[in-house]
Length: 202
Ligand code: ATP
Image: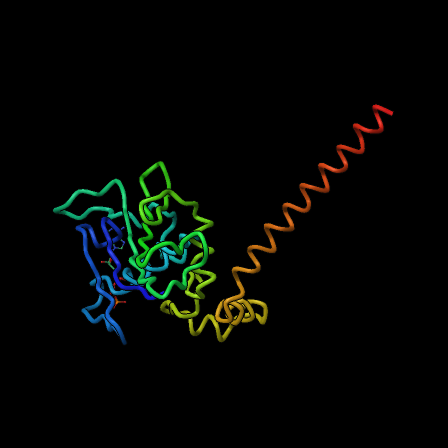
């Protein structure tokens, strides 16, 4: 899977729809301080399902919505779309029926976030899993925030292990194991309830 285009609309300082074309090879983003370079990286992390407002340098998730300036009023929603070249069909099943994949996340004030994959509604969990399987997720070590290197140097071994696991592409498996454990617990509860009912009937 190769990212080919990032589109921002009302996201942080990108009030008007803005396309960032991601060509083959290395893409560099240059510009003066405060022009929005970090916001671009945050948009990428956000569309992949980031849930921590702090990782977006905000107090709450709605802080990603354009907050207005002296000359422009605030927006009511923010939207980021990520276009992915899936011609090699490397996307996991459920996402793998077309050559191009368009993942869209939109947040609306007082409503929250909604996701779409190729115009169909999907859950946050599905999008997070898609990118976790591809080892490019919101927590991927491929995306390095400002200050992250020094955080990593000072991190506890458990936190460092998580970075290695993400790079190895096994964090999606952890999520699946967690879900399987929850299902198992539910089933055990149901079995206990059935035992109770049988006992009452006997
Ligand atoms: P530097 O080179 O200093 O790290 P940068 O190019 O990475 O800067 P960013 O940190 O991405 O710049 O962008 C900061 C700008 O984004 C600031 O001008 C800030 O006011 C603006 N900004 C952040 N959130 C919002 C928002 N919700 N609405 C409007 N503008 C915002």
